[in-house]
Image 1: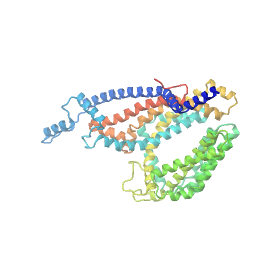
Image 2: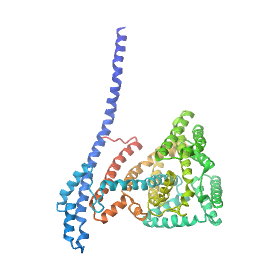
Image 3: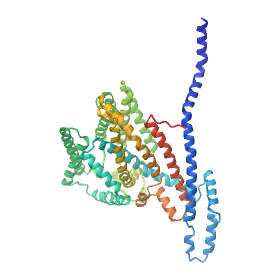
Image 4: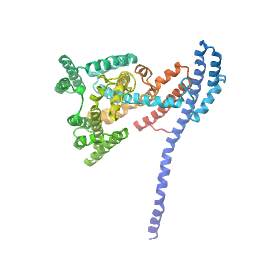
Length: 538
């Protein structure tokens, strides 16, 4: 009896200590990661400090802010030179000026542009959002499309599709960006705007495009000869039907998906997502995804009323709500692997929500393209917005899209080629590993082998490239911004360097350098997330 009482008392004393023990256990397990992160941040700060010193010295000795005054014929030239020397503190040695700049950095003062008189902080505050707006969509699309096409190319190794992708990748990789941008302005904007005057597709072009589509789908899907012919026939008939519909109805002049379009494309998204993530034999995942499509179709007309006073936050909230609905539907269908159903349903719900959003943007196309400021030529070639154009959220969104279209495509084409080659080579290497052969020997389907065993490991080499590319792009796509008259970080750098304005150049370098340093740290953690054998520690 005494032993029994002692055991219960011991249990009573240990219960309150359980949270403390859990916290201590978490701290002990997290301590190596926190130590590693602290050491990396400290070393990165030292590297960034040394880099800023070197760049400041180079600018101090390479740039001459008095160059325009030295050749001036103004009668008060000496007074102007003296005033600028005092304003820029040029009598102070460059090393001391650097430490003054560094002191201002710690207080949040990055200096002032002597050309415009604006603070560097305000210049960066206007340039960074513009660059983010430009490169965010292009980077995400280039990564997504590049990885997807590269994986399909690897799975179809030594086929016509693989050879075509390889050839196209090398061609795009070798093209100069300024030439691609100029061609896009010529054919993507001027040519398409001229085509919109009479959007009729000639029968010959319908036949050519349909045949190319048939060959493309046959190569992508592959399989037996019968499967290839069925895929080619479906691609041929489907493409020809779509082109005939667009040409005969003038759909491009007043485009719309409508409830039928959202429902049809949504069903296609559901089948595609389930085929990739769970397999069509997983009926629970398929029914959950189709249910989210039905819910989206049911909410199509009620959402039109919610869109009347739309704002960015409302759209973001609706996007989050669509994902939550997909997760709930997937969980309700349950099953032994409900996580798969939840993932498939959530992705499908987000896709259907995006279709409804795109359909609502299309609704203002006719009014937008016929506005006096647009004059029937909606695809813009320069700038980030149309001067003098006013409208609600949807008009502003469409105007932003038409200005982003060409520079985004230019950046995608250049980045797409490299991501395709990297992902193809990486997956081919992984598919020859012993554990892949073992998975196949166990009887697993090729979809499971590829998506659950090979794909994750194939992403490891890309983990080194993608964060660094993203950080570098935030420094501004200098050539693209120049050609399309986009006022981003690249334009700020070129303008400031040409004007011998050192402070904005230092602000530009500080932002891009800090992002690159942080990207290197992110790479380590992405490696650890993709490969369980890798641990970040001190």
